[in-house]
Image (cartoon, rainbow, N blue to C red; front, side, top):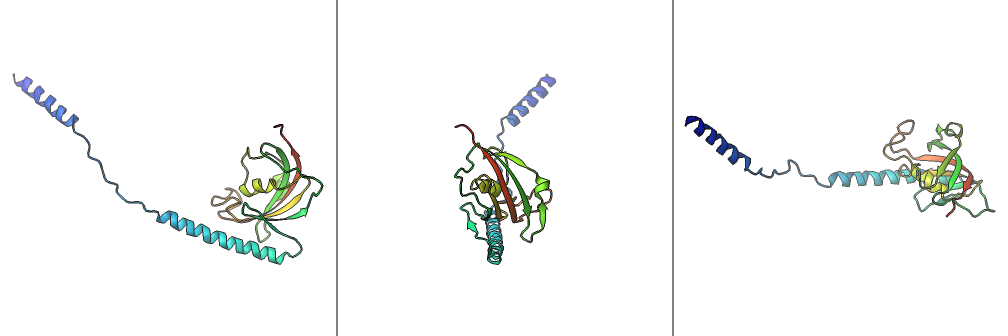
Length: 182
């Protein structure tokens, strides 16, 4: 009879413990929006400083007429195509070359290093500013763009030669636009 009491006691204990509901735990720490607020202020200050540098470049370059894009960058034409009206649209294949420089004119990538690139509009990865810049170009045009870091490689850089939050100057030559059948 003794083993029966031990087994019964163990089963009763297991049954009571198994039916126990865990108590909800309270969070260890409370997260506020302070990180996001600080990040927003930092990025606004960074953009303001970069725009100030862009305006200084534009002011010192009286030989060229700069245009402000609705996508947050500035540009001027080196070679303009007034006879054509076709600009790249979604899915079109464009062939182009470009170089990248800092605002201090230090070369990061030359046109020879980059080579001739082919890109399907809005279907492949490309630096944000460059992608939007190609959309305003026509075949045969050469344009210099001034990109704030938010339109260039942003916080992460390109993990090779371009560091964090570096505004860029790019000269792009659009060689051809191959339109897709729609």
